[in-house]
Image 1 (cartoon, rainbow, N blue to C red):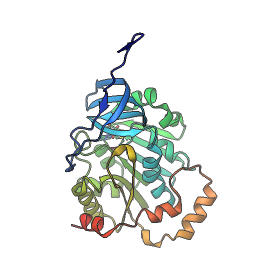
Image 2 (image 1 turned 180 degrees about the horizontal axis):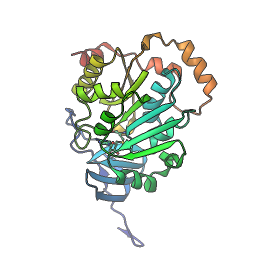
Image 3 (image 1 turned 180 degrees about the vertical axis):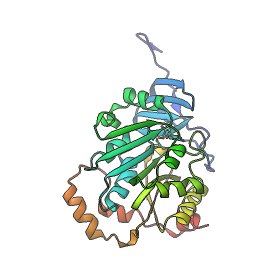
Image 4 (image 1 turned 90 degrees about the horizontal axis):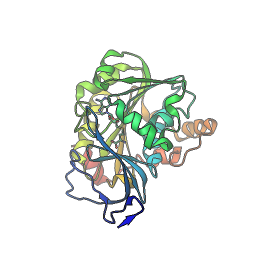
Length: 294
Ligand code: SAM
């Protein structure tokens, strides 16, 4: 049916493709209002869609990365956990994160500097154009330092540099495939300062349990203290989604009272994360614990 010069196809649905480690054989569709962009960079296929329920979405190599409607759940869980757990985060590094959502989240804190190393400049430029509501001008903040480079090489070069490192990487299929190795996590630990902490988006406990288990066990071998948190991010259609933190200090020593007092002082406007959510999200049912500790 044609409306003016806009061709409306009633049956446009987005289905994810080739999600690494996904054993579900399930496809759930998202109805699309219109395609905003489709093209290729040196590293991956990049698409932006406007959808009825989730608003605009970014898709890389057929896999949904973020949506306007629920990005806050993902970015708050990924960034607020380590930022509140660390005593005094001043220098933060994001590896990946091309949509700018993690950057925007970190800049809510009084940090001195956020470095971001993203392999694909095109994801950043297109996200600024099609998803400005996610980065909210964060790329122009004077504390932001952007590097266009492979995160693996960047991490190797930087020793004892960061208080917090956020691994906001796509699933390990395309350019991020080498960034779940034991050696990579060793270099991440080396790049952290004395009391540093890393936060990792680690996939779906429901559909990618092997991946979550692999990341958890590798991080556990390298870092003295490790915890896993879970949340539901509806656009990911991934059931229980996971976030892993690994730190050089003992995470068990951070009490609810400490987090509550820091949270009160910080006066951040958040919609998902709070100290209660932090502790509640680390409680796992037995069947999920069993999946991880294999
Ligand atoms: N929320 C996300 C998800 O669901 O997977 C991650 C979002 S963010 C868009 C992922 C970014 O990681 C992409 O922009 C991609 O270009 C970047 N990336 C992948 N491999 C990388 C590498 N080796 N070094 C740096 N950035 C990388």
